[in-house]
Image (cartoon, rainbow, N blue to C red):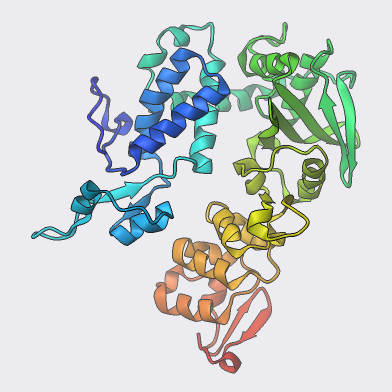
Length: 411
């Protein structure tokens, strides 16, 4: 449903925009549920219900257009009757097509990640003047302040080095590229070890407002959560005590859940360390569920019901996923993983051609049919360089020739 303009008059760049998201009530309900599960403070819950919800409805990028009843049924995956009000909205009028409508997945991984980042940032401002005017901070302002905070952290990182004694670390697992340690939440050296981790990894785990006292800021909430037993922190370190991956697992009554898995500068850990993290996830293990940090580095939990795998659901690298539909669901938000497939499934290639044709350049091989369709559908300047330069009748990507004539297709 379209949202009314906010009571204040922000500049157009910061305005909450109206957009007909047909499942807006479900989106708000999901935001409220996640806030309740996290145990957010009442003022944080109110901010999410108001500002974050309005931003998601009007400005979150990953929404799906609905141009027909079939589109709605496809995204919801149910055979329930379509509401009459939606039928009327989508019904073509005498002057043209129906009203533009959109569907927003309430559990979209990137929406949840943006929500987590904002909650973390705003919580780090407890005890400051920002806390007193929280409800006057709209989502655009919060996102800008978060970005500025991270830029400042990057400029100050050379001043925040704290030595590592290793006393607050417990060895958990030896992996191909090092050792995974757990931070001891009860050890006096916990905060020093967290600050050392942040200095080398250039992220906010041990970024304390006071470098002298190692208190306040982002580091305070992580340290307190570890001390209270609400969060378990891990680090992958190689020779020389050098950190490469930081892992946090949230502690719930029903077990552990992945909170974050970060490489340097909050990026996804590089491919080199995927096997180390995979071994960790299979050993601990946390609850098997989808998470953007895991999927961003190519690690997924494929349930038994999806994989039809007698060994049961398990964590695996994306190239090992059995079920094609599950693979496409993962890849639709992680096109960068296409480069890891020696022989990319044809269905994945068609998905790239349909949604992100520019990502075809990541493929090591291109299916003849997909290559031919790309040549027909895309402008010459939008084709990957390898396709633009191919002679008629054959395709070649990274030196791997594909004889299209033999297969009855031409480029």
